[in-house]
Length: 323
Ligand code: PBG
Image (tube, rainbow, N blue to C red; front, side):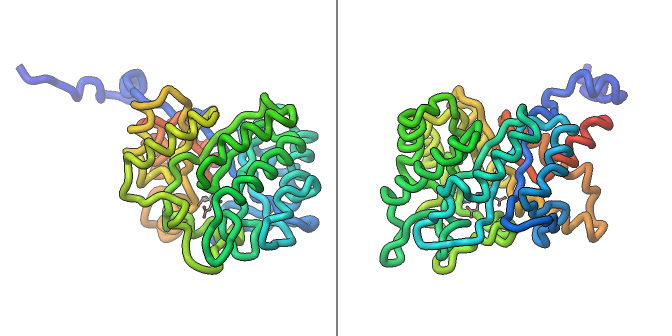
């Protein structure tokens, strides 16, 4: 007798019933880029369908997020002023801080996560303090903690450090607790690889390093065990959610993390992943909806509980239709 596996593929009804992995709007986080200035909603050329918003124009996108059913957003700020120590990143009147306050006014239930890093705010574009062309860990961590407290003071629900300095989660936790923000949580970019998939983001966020690369702090794409050490360390230091980034080329890392750690796992489907699909779809080479949903489903299947994706708004619609 042969095993007839095709019986459970006979019709959509049964396929839906036996599907092992599902994708829900509740899994998704939408990234929003906020810029200084007024009346700005400008498409980001490297990320078609994604926009720069000035604070006075945030209402529109916040409404879209609200009606989509998406629970959370992650904010990225583009400041007017850059310097060597990222001072506009911890300015209580900085672009992200004002955006948080505005969004809280517009939609108090939205879960607001902030990306905490220095690269958009430094004139050299690195994620830390630079001395003699080296990125100095502990001085950077002090600033990262300061930025986090400033975001919490503005009303952020969750802090997401993406700098990859050693010891930053511990420093952030300590600083938040000291200032009375013990309920503000940390989603750490724990296993963040030095990846060419960030290219379109750096154009979008004006954060391309002006010299060298990020290989002395972001991880080597060849490594699994190192990712496990990073994640373990972040959990010990107080991370509430751990993240793997990018997602698509790192599905194995997501699965490893899922099997080893009993913590929620976020995966960041980064700018390059989005841009590749957009470019291929524009050329008519692929079916955008089908391929985007298949990609997101595969990230879930690998073990992610949460997916950060520029497709979040579109995917929320597509999922509603029937997927
Ligand atoms: C800031 C940061 C980056 C991304 C998220 N936070 C860029 C980088 O590390 O160079 C990448 C996001 C994406 O590519 O979508 N450090």
